Length: 488
Image 1 (cartoon, rainbow, N blue to C red):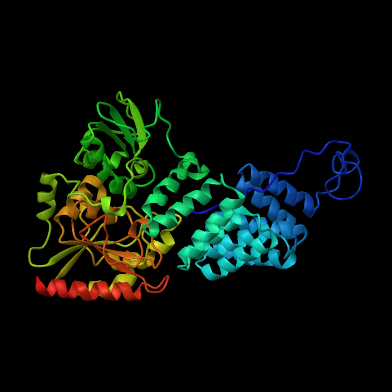
Image 2: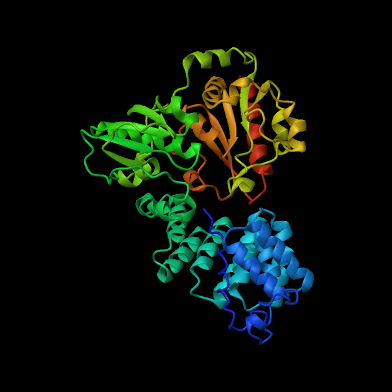
């Protein structure tokens, strides 16, 4: 969970008798407010860019910033916010030279350092990002956004205690800042502090990033009181992996006497119906059935006071369609170890560059004898040119193209090797052996250091030893795969 750059404040409207914002000293009506006014200055153009930027018109804002730079190539505001736009477009390599120039021109502006830190993190230059955010805080110690971003950068370099301290420092200044609470929650959960972590995690529902995407449901929220005799609508949020992971808790509600209706994304509809405790399933867009109270699926751990010892459930807790599993098994090779590969997550995920790896990085797996590799990437999903050349060495079965078919294929395989994406959760929920390749500092659910997962007993975790370096975990996976194939 990141914290985006603060939206620039649009300039106040200029009255005809006000001083012209170009700085000429004239009244606006006698300067740029006249019909025959001279062309706008770089300052004017930068202000126009900020106005467009503030209303979310990035195309117009970029045009104005570039026009300002055409008039004055070292205009610091235009340099900086053009860099911000490039960062927003996920082009940090292009953004950073502009942000660097702006900081050099106006070194005393804390926001310039703060936003530069965000771009450095996006470029995976985390230690430099830490320094940039620290500089912003030297200039403005009461900047809650910079405290938040410092915490995120510290977490990326593995200093979880430092990250927690930064988030807490920000909350002293801004106790109602939801992103600080949410990121504090993620760091606490990563450390295994579930008691405080789940309470803080509820702040996610107040963050603009998630709140804008959440559906709103009529009726009261379930707050954790006795659910016996009532129908609970449990609503999925965020990604497929999140929903798969948290469906395990529905059976606790059923055990307390509730009738549970699960509202899940359409791809999960059939699988969710197999989760213990689920009485009925509906999908987004369906007419909602009658219910008494509703609750977000990922709020169940807080409502149920889940500890690290509580996450284990009888396995599997999801089941693929038996007939489709038999069909998929018929396409496998009896005399080989059948292994599915998932090497990249959804590109729109802000952490995808950290959790994914190029298929070529898995080259050692392709040379293991008596192993047949199957692609778990859907047909039509974009492949890089480098990935495309390696993908021809895998078998691509049509089952992978819908989620129920993918579940059947995963259930039929001998092993799944996956990065941190929904396929790892799917394999774990189906109790299929799954080896998960993880960044040095992973998502909260995989905890720290340990080679196993309390959430998925069938999972083994292969972690980077150095941030961004996949060579060591891939080498260990290749060796384990070779031994497993040999034993077979």
